[in-house]
Amino acid sequence: MTSDVEQIQTVVKAVEAAMEAKDVDRLLARYTADAVTFDLAPPLRRVGQEALDAEGLAAWFAGFDGPVHYAVVDLEVTAGEDVAFCHALNRMASTPNGSPEGFVMWFRMTAGLRKEDGRWRIAHEHTSTPFHMDGSFRAATDLEP
Amino acid sequence: MTSDVEQIQTVVKAVEAAMEAKDVDRLLARYTADAVTFDLAPPLRRVGQEALDAEGLAAWFAGFDGPVHYAVVDLEVTAGEDVAFCHALNRMASTPNGSPEGFVMWFRMTAGLRKEDGRWRIAHEHTSTPFHMDGSFRAATDLEP
Image (cartoon, rainbow over all chains, first blue to last red; front, top):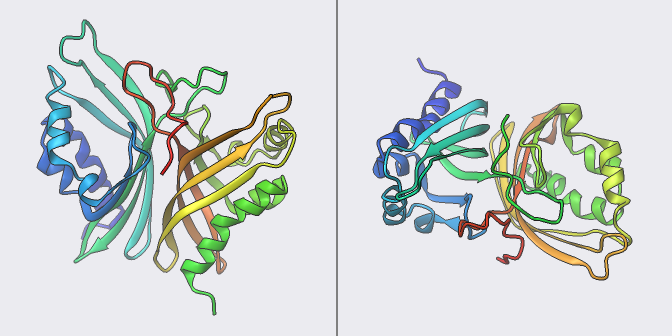
């Protein structure tokens, strides 16, 4: 039998293959219907249907010529019986349409999960970069672990 | 008897009084010894003693003339028996030393908690602002809920 930690690793890491395949349904199936997300881009918070925006996600995918490479690194899971949280450092690499060159960015990911009907789903996800406090307030998208 | 959710609310919201009092010990007592933090400022991640840096925190407090006002807003807690997570939008307001005027900033906070010896502590904390994807890569420190 697969342990809770292994099941959670599978749910969280499913983002890797889903991003590569630009598979919106597979990505969104990982979340609870009432999910709350704190994303890389504004606004501060998205709730429920606003967080699970299939059209917005498809439009975002359409902005990249080739695949979106995505890796979940150093994933650490803390699981109880039906509530869990985890954190990782994620690496994304892609090339926006019409851009002469691609980008690579590392960012932090934290997720809170609930087990419902025997299945772990993401109820909360927080992704971010820190920002430079040197007066520039520039997002630190150039950091590496 | 106080519920787990109430106990967690108390631990998380203790940041409010501790910030106002610039009380380093009270702030750090809320965390597990192996806490992992993703902070507003670089680096990407801090672990254990690096995350629980009393000297660094004291130096940070010393950079403000007056009090550091801090509020945890819209705190939502999901608690199991011994693992929990929560998220909130936090508001910080203060005046850096020598600055002609103060600042107000809203940011997102996610925490993962473990119950050890009957007491809830923060094992992971992630604070951030999103950043503008208009090419400026500027941290969105001007957002309000």
